[in-house]
Structure formats: structure tokens, C-alpha cells
Image 1 (tube, rainbow, N blue to C red):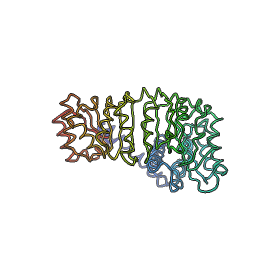
Image 2: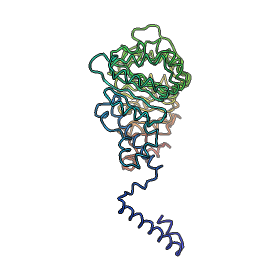
Image 3: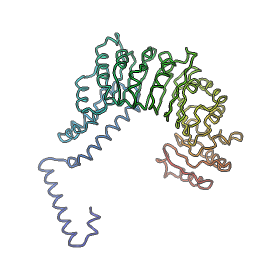
Length: 449
């Protein structure tokens, strides 16, 4: 405002300065007289944006801390409740935002009145429901708390957009209820199997539920093979999800150990698949997953081997990729997270995913990747590769320079390199020298992710 006033003619400028000063004086007098703070003059539209971002940031912190909500977080006041308790004005704004109250958290021994409060304030908006808990004594199927929470979920599943069930106990009442209730608005389903508890014998393969989940685009299954879905049920489940675009499998949620007959299922619109095997996985799991799923439109594949105990656990997958035809030729973005990757592993990936244009790797294997791509016998690996994404900046810069020169000379140039943390160090002398060196050899865009 001061800059705008400075450009005005003299008389107009003096008049407007007088008006501005008068308004500021009146505002200060009101603040002193009525004890009103400056923050009270924030427009409601801006206040709503602040509320939304505050709730999002809190949820992101909780999700990154653990997949299973600990007691300390369950007892921490919800941000939307705190915002609605600041003043009558803020309370009115918060209550006028139904979307602020759509995340329904359910856990054992919680206050039922709080759940009903959120359901009322959401005013019929689509819900995100999360049931998390650990049962320590008695039979949970007869526990009043378990039955009550199951009834809450089942009575609102018709307006549920996202459902997550994560409990270290069997929940047959809930799973059996899915057989008789439609979920037409469900878009994302996340199920964490309890360890060593055979929920999967009647888990999510009833046609009534699956045929009604026409909007379901994201599915996450997490568990061990001893309590996992049978291959038949897993195939049946996926075959009904005609709109599925994102599939995440954590641990070993399908029991391929005790089955010889492996049905194949095609997912015509699947775009992203994330595989995160756990420690001590069976040798048959990863190769069988690659064989059992056909995804002609798959564009992104994430292989997260961080929790795998050793490369020996994945050797059967490496052998299959080396010998067989490429399992997903349409993949263009490959993300690899691992503590280490041997030469034959890189060779198998180069054979199976030769069409990728973007390769993202975790910090532990950045140097191994660049060493593999720079060696004399493998300089033609990943011929279409144009973008490299690194999880960290701590790697051998000389290897990167060497790799870029080799790719440029071979007619397969890398045009973009992105590194996590690069933005924070972008003005440092070391990074400045790196960028200068890269500009000398090849036109590469350096950025951050």
C-alpha cells in the first residue's frame, strides 16, 4: 500500500495517507477498548485455509511416525478440536467446515461421544475411517468395544471414501458384515492383517462388497503368508476391482507357500504398484507376484527391499528376471530402495525394465548404480533412461560426472538429475562447483525432489 501511495500525485497522496492513518487509529482504539487481537481480523476464507493446512500437517507427522498409532498420539488432542476451542469466532468457522471433521479415528476404549460428535459435524460428507488397536485380553469377537466399532464402520460404510483396518486381533464381525453391505463410495482400502491370525479365511473376497466397490482405485494389503489370502482369493479380489490404479503389497500378504495352482489376474488400468516385502520372505513370493499379475498399463513400479534381511531372500526374483521375459514392459518409472544391490541384481533389472525413462534409487545404492552403468560391459543398460532421482546428496560426485560423460558419448544422455536435500544446499560452494562441472560436459538439469 505504501508503494502504491508513493506513486500518486501530491494532493491525492496526502488525502489517502490521512484516510489510512485515520483507519489505523480507529483500529488501534478498537483493539485497546475491546481487547480484540489483530488475528481476529483475518478473513474467514484465509482462516479456513489455515485450518486445513494445520490439520494436514498434523496428519502427515502422525503418518510418518508409525503405521500403527501409538497411545501418545491417540491421547493427543486433535488439531480441529483445538482450533474450535480458541474463540467463538474460530469455533463458528470450524463448525462451518464439514470436511474438517471427516476423519474418523476408531480405537478400543475410546469415547463414543467424540465419535458421534465427528459424525454429526461432518454433515454427510464422505468419511475417512481408521480402526487401529491392540487387544490384550479376552476374546475380541465378544468384546463390546470391538462389536461397537464394527457396527460404527458398517453403518457408515456407504459414505466411506477411505477405510483402514489395522488391528493385532481378529475382527470377524467386521469382515463378515461386508458380505451384506454395499460400499459404493469406497475409493481406498487398507487392511493390515494381524500376525499369525487367519482373518484371511473370510477376508474381503465376497462378491457383494467387491461388486459394489466400483470406485475403488487404491488397495493396500499388509501381512504374513501364514495369515494371508490364498492365491485364489487374492486373484478373485483383484479381478473384481476394475477401477484399481494403485496396488500396495507390504510383507507377504498372499500365501503362495502352500499353493501350487497360481491363478493369473489382469489389472487393465493399474498404473502404480508398490512391493515392500518383509524380513524372511519365502523364496517363491516375489517371483510368483510378478507371474500372477498382468498389468498392461503399469507405469510406475516401486521395489522397496529395505526390510528384507539379505540379498539371498531376493535371489529367486533376480534369477527369474534374468531368465524370463520382461514382466511389465510398460513401466517407465522404476523406484528401488535397498541397503545393497549386487551386480547380478542390477543386470536383472536392466534386462527386465529396459524401457524405463526415470530411475529412482535410495542413498545406499547410488554409487553401486553409477558403478554398474559406467562399467564397460553394461554401458548400454537402460537405453531410454533420461532422469535420475537420488534419495540423498551423499555420493561420489566424480562417479556421476563420469556416468554422464559415458551416457552422452554413447548417445543415451541423461538430461535430468534430482536429489533430495539439494535445495537446502543449492547455494553452497561444493554444489556450485558440481553444477559448473556438469555444465562443462553435458546439458543436464540439476534439481531437487
